[in-house]
Length: 129
Image (cartoon, rainbow, N blue to C red; front, side, top):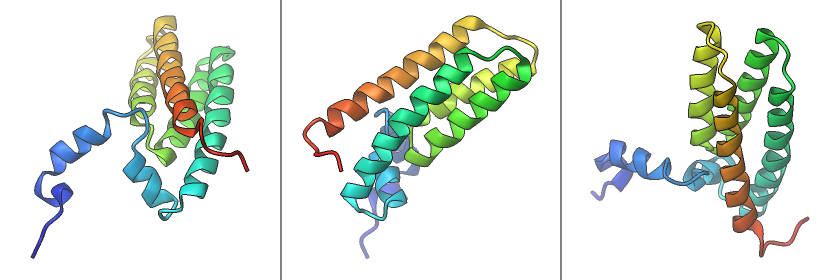
């Protein structure tokens, strides 16, 4: 009986998935393998990520920071943008610990932009619906 690489080497498989800004295998599972749906989800996520990051930058309280980080993290986990998930988790932990570091918000912005560029490159030849 053949076993998948994921079953044989789960840690390596997960590490490989995290190298891309979007885990395309996770996204395909979420969209049930429908490429048109994957493209639409990525287009929507691109807009949502940009919007949540703007709200994060405009946050004026700890509660707003945490709410916006959590919202961005949740949206990112849906499409497999694990880099955003990880940096948001770190930022949430720091904020809860009383360490509000503006540079961390800039770090979140850099990861969001990396994902947005990846999406743009991935979809550049795909017709918008």
